[in-house]
Image 1 (cartoon, rainbow, N blue to C red):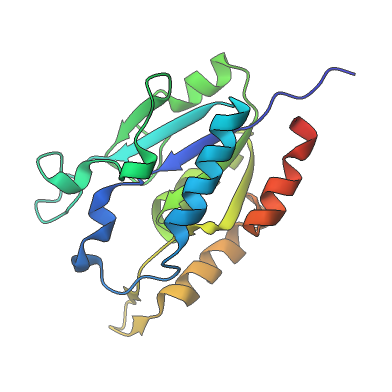
Image 2: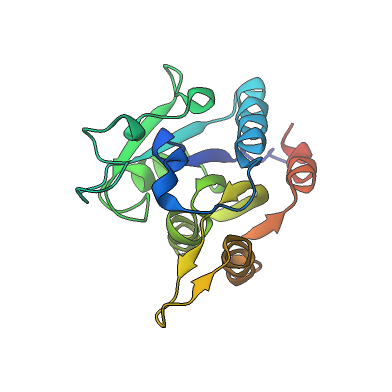
Length: 189
């Protein structure tokens, strides 16, 4: 039996700008700790890691290319051999060579982490699944912020987070706890 290739880790928008207070209340303040754990796990295994960086066109965004918030968080700074894909929309597959790179490297499975659960993580996950990739997400290595709905009602970040993951689970991705995700990857070792 030919062993399966290990998955690639896709680090979505792990940028300093997400610590800007303009985003409002966030769920899961320990998410970066879990992201760092997954990043270290992949680095120790020498499995592929790809970083996605959001370059906003919104003049008020902390993720604009001319603002310090566009930089990667210190723990998530890419290493020399880790590729960076720059985007300006919610999907890491739009306007980048991510899909072609994954195909060229014969990568069929992805682990996705980063910001935010309901925007770029969700959009990238949906597109990845529609493109034929198998996707896994640790509920602990993603986070989001409070949102205001179409009626002006404030929606709690934790509820947004849970609803976004529920809409992805078993249709676009498998959602795990951090320990469950790492356990699910053991057969690649």
